[in-house]
Every structure is written in structure tokens, then in C-alpha cells.
Length: 544
Image 1: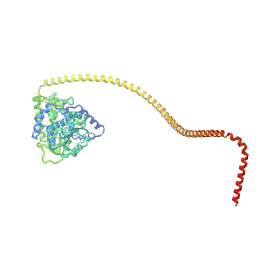
Image 2: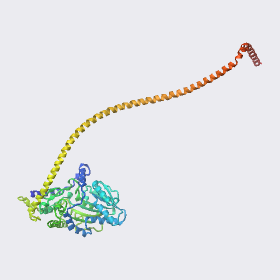
Image 3: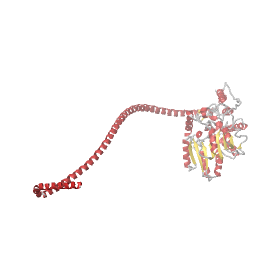
Image 4: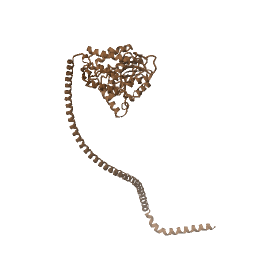
């Protein structure tokens, strides 16, 4: 079984060795990219301590990596950021920095506290990240430390980021291996970085998906045989790996999506002021997956890690394998001299994907496969102890299975209850839907009736308007006639008054009526004589 597994590893690494990043992985549109975004967000939503690592990692880094850093004037990756970002704080006021992929903003908050403690407070750090949950944790932590003015937070997909400012320095701490559009990101960083600015990076530059290249995988499997079964439990994937599985971490999210392209693209965009490449074969043994199996205080565990590191260093310095991690400081301007560890220049550390190594001879035995998977004599304790460890793990696994079974049964019970509730709800929804349809029909009928009423109302309003106009006309005429009637009444009253006055006069002249009867005819005769004489005189005068 073990020899078949070794054969599988050889076949897989040969088939994968030249596989370029597919179009579906590079595309930023469609459901595949959306699924990767969701996976990336979900993975880090609850990740409060992003940089938590096994104790054996800290043993290895302090024992073997730190001396190399000290030779370059540094003590740790954080010290790299403090030193080269701090230089820009010391140059003047109004410094502005941007951290791409800041996560929970732990590094950025520590940098701000450090700068403030050294008397520099006139700076801003823009923290960019895809995950709003992580940025909110950073926002809360910054506010608690009084850094709300110095640290700003921007939620953005780095594949679509457009710089809004010019920056004195750009920070990328374990971020670039999550980015699909590296070319676009580097072009944007180059455009927003000041001429004398610094691009400070700590990142992974190994094979895509954090896989081992074939030549390194041979060495990992060689050391894997020396591990007892109790050291082969993958804590990240929660599984036992009899043989190390060269797992592609970029299959679902963005972990290591284009890590092998980072260094070549950086070389084409920037000029290196400092470069420190390290680690390859050692990584699986000290990282989160298997590092927790080691006891950092146990002599055998330390000796094993020392041996792996020594082999790793020898092979890296010879160029047979390439570093998978780097610390770097870059600039837009050409530099006169670069700080690095001989012979590990950036170009020396690039692994050509087209390179096909000669397959190393790997022990195999068709008749005794277990002998290929285990180097029994290299274990730190007896087979009996390994069996005890296995039994302890089986007991823990049984307890975990029991717990999870109870939990699953509880979930199943809740599911059944929710299904029943869902069925009931569906029935109610059906009834409510039917009732709603009836209400809708009634509403439509009443709407039609209301529309008819509205039409009638409009007609009646129009009729009332007409009647009101006619009423106003008639009222005007009535008012005029009333005024005329009042005038007539006044005239009648005046005439009645004059008639009364005349009657009074006539009554006063009643004594003259008998005289009228005696003098009427004589007076009329005299009148006629006078008129006739006047007429004859007029004719005579006219004829003369």
C-alpha cells in the first residue's frame, strides 16, 4: 500500500509539474470566482489569531532563521517592517502608508504603537482587506489603543483596488499569495509608491497551492519515513496521513493561488534593496498541519527538526531546491547595492516551472509495504508507546465521535422538528396564499368599483361646477333686478309723494272749480282770438 502511495506521488507530481494556472482560477467573474471569494471570507471570519503557529515553529525560527536575519541587521519579520517603514516616519511629517491584505491589522497596530512610542504620531496607515469581519476587529482594537486617527480601514477586493493616495511605503504581510491579479496589483503599487518609497514584503513564494516541487517532495517523503505514526496526524485537515499528501491549498479559496509567480513578477516591476529567502522542506514539519505533533522541548523532536533544517539549507544553498519564503524590501528606483545572503539573490531563488528534475530513488518493497512508509529504528520511543498513543487517540476519537453523534442526533431531531414546522408553515402559507388571492380579487373588484365611483364623482363635480356658474349668473341678474326693483320702488314712492302733494294742492284749489266753469269758455275764446291775430301778423311780416 505504501509503495502504491509513493507511485501515486510520483505520477501526480509529474502530471502537476507543468500545469499552469487555469483560466477559471485567473478569472475574476462568474460563479467560480464568487465561490472562491465566499470560501476566503468564510475561512477567516472566525480567525482571531491569524498568525498562531506551533511551538516547534518558534523553536525552528529562533534557532535557525533568526541568525540569518541578524546577519542582515534584523531580528524578525516584524523588525523588518519596523525598520524600513520607520525610516519614512523619521524623514518628515504627514507620512502615509498602505497595508494590502491587513486582516485583523495586528501588524499595523503594533507598527503604529511603535512609531508613537518613538515620538512620531503624524502618519496614517490605510488598511485594505477583503474581509469586513477582520477589519472590524482591527477597528475595535485600534480604537481601544487610541489609534483611530492613525489607522484607516477600507474593505476592498485587492484584485479590483484603485489607489486613492500616494504612499511613502506599501506593506504586504503574507498577502500576495492570496491575490489572483498580481500583475495589476503590482502595477498599481508601483504607480502609487513615491519615488523614494519602499515596498516591504513578507510572503510565500513556493509552488502554487503551497505544494512541494518534485525535487523537494522527494526530500519531504524521505524525512516522512522517520516520523512515528503519532506525528502524522494533520491537525488542519483532521486526518491521518500515512504518507505526506502534496495537497493543493488553492483548490477552493485563494490560498497560494499564484505564489510561484510572485517573485518573478516582483523582479519585473521593482528593484530589490533587501532580499532574504529561506525554508522549503522544513515547512510541512513546523507549520500548522503537522507542527502541533512535535514537542518543542523534547530532544528527539528538536534533533529531527535540526536535521531537516540542515538538509534544507544545504539543498537551498546548492540551488537544487528553492526557498518557499521570503522577506524583501523594494523600490521604484534602481539601487546601488542589495542586501542579501549569498548566493540567494531573488533571481537565484526563482524556480522554473518547466524544470524537470531527475526522480530520486525512493525505497519501495512490494512484499512489505509498511517498511517503505516507516523507518522503525528512527522513532523516539518504542512501538508499544506508539500503540499506546494510537489507542489514546482512538479513545479521544471515539469520545469525539460519540459527542458528534449525539450532536448530530440532536441536529437530526431539530431538523425533523423544523421539517414538520416547515410542512406546517407550507400549509399555512398555502392557506394564506389562497386567502391572499381572494383578498386580491376583492381588492380588484373594489378598485374597479372605486374607479367607477371616482368617475361618477368627477361627473358630479363637473355638474356642480356648471350649476355653480349658472347660480352665480342668476345671482348676478337677481341682484341687478333687485337693484332695478328698488329703483322702481323709489320712483313709485316719489310719484306717490308727488301725487299726494298734487292732491293737497288740488284740495287747496277746490274753490277755483266753480270759477273755472264760468270763465273757461270766455277765456278759451280770447285765447283763440289772440292766437289768430299772432298768426296774421306773422304772415304779414313774412310777406313784407
